[in-house]
Length: 272
Image 1: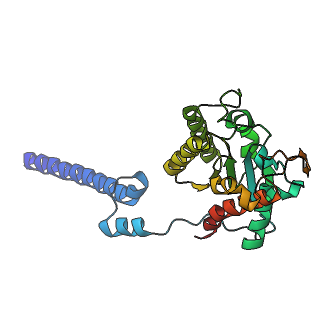
Image 2: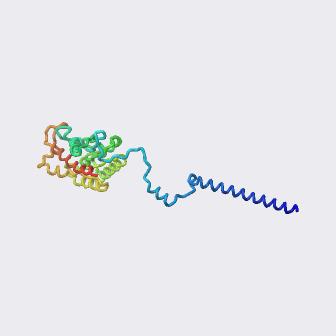
Image 3: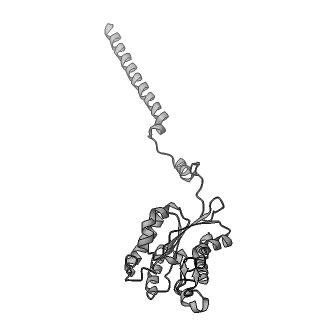
């Protein structure tokens, strides 16, 4: 009779062991279900994945970026001019008669936008002698608008270091634009050259670069080519704020025409 009792004892012990193991497994499964998302063990359902994909981005404390046209007295349009003697204002009768300040006034009058001007231009300047050495300072102005007026001095082959072959000029202009686009958010407008024997050759390079980068170009050739009728050239010996007219650089009328021509390329930038 003791043998059957021994058999039942082992049977109960076995059943108890199995139940203990099953209880442990169930506990583990419960823990996994509870912490599955936390541990990254589950994939989102199709509905939740779709909802997550279409959900609006989380709100941030950063202010939305201002549009290019959002200018005010507290945030004036920053206009940075790069160029040679034309951009300096040779040979206007007064400093504020040059095309750079005239363009700033035109923008203010036509768009009701205050303008802050930084002029990095130099007499006899070229991209190599004016723009490249001042890049850090140019970036620091955080310009909204940049006008680039080079090529006139580069076209004079016997005037190093200002001169540059057409191919070199194009490379320098390309590099300048790439640098500006990499370090600023400025809108860029290019100007063609002024009244030189090789103007057509260098103007073609300006147009080529502009087309590649989708930039607007202010063509100055019609102004100086029609100077006898429009009075665009300074009179030799006529007084100016920088010396005396030489019959080559613009007069007050010439600068006003340049500003008008450049503004025609700036104006569309204000239209979304």
